[in-house]
Image (cartoon, rainbow, N blue to C red; front, side, top):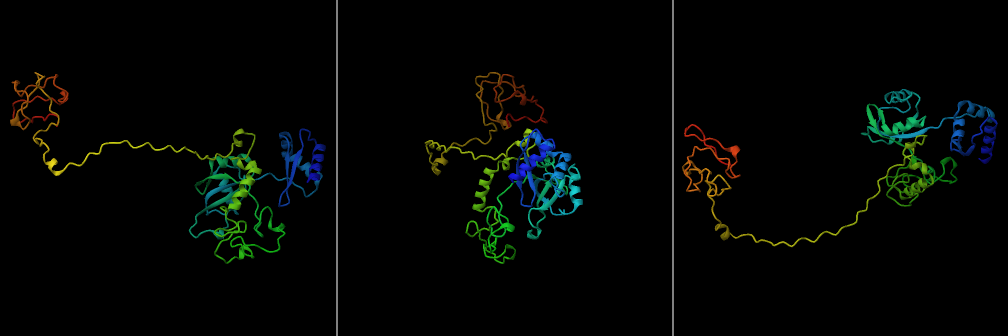
Length: 356
């Protein structure tokens, strides 16, 4: 790869690249090559279609530049769509105001034959041709079959071999002679497994399969992989905009100190009264409609009530005012002036009850 990087730098400098150079060259598992520039000026120069064509002419007739794809995942997408249909991709682009060629490819995250009979939604993997459209989908979601689906950026994970169930190699490059099952850890292929019990090759324990995402060996390797790849901590695909470099907000565990509970206050416990004590309680006059009887002896203008009318007795013997007199404004607060009514001697008028 060092020779390829040196050759690309030589070709780029001959074609006019002067503001930077190629920093690294990575060979992918599908035979492609990822070129990384060391400056923005060099990245812009390499992104030009004219310069890409000139570089391909220098390398060879079969060489070509392909734009980078931005992989996202949409959750709970209706299973009515067919990812292999071009018309369905165009329909999603139209529903979300995207260019018709924005979605390069789509596929289901889980195989169709592994779905439950009643399953109506599934997770969909999409490849977008530009970072702006991908970040927009992450921010706003995608509208698929009149359903708003949440979208997140897919992140790189450790590679697991489908032949030996080991790590960091592919089945085509595996050096192991025999196959190991990802379901039961047996010496056969996973596709031909007939065992219902699960066992993990990495943990060498039962209870879960080798492909389980809750496997302790897998979670440990994911944590180590994230440390080596800080790009996984970003929520969006980084662009020239500053907000796209924001990391994923993970709520930290809040540790609250345990405060000892205060000692209960010592209160006197009152014993329940006996039946004899309950029988000696004073009996209240049920004919009294007022629970509050003010002392009218200090109010010379207060009105007294007649016991013949069904009210309480006159508590002010010195008072000789007639019953049809209007309540005075100086009466105590227990008898508000808003409830004062003129009581005439006519028998067809109803006498108001004070504070009823």
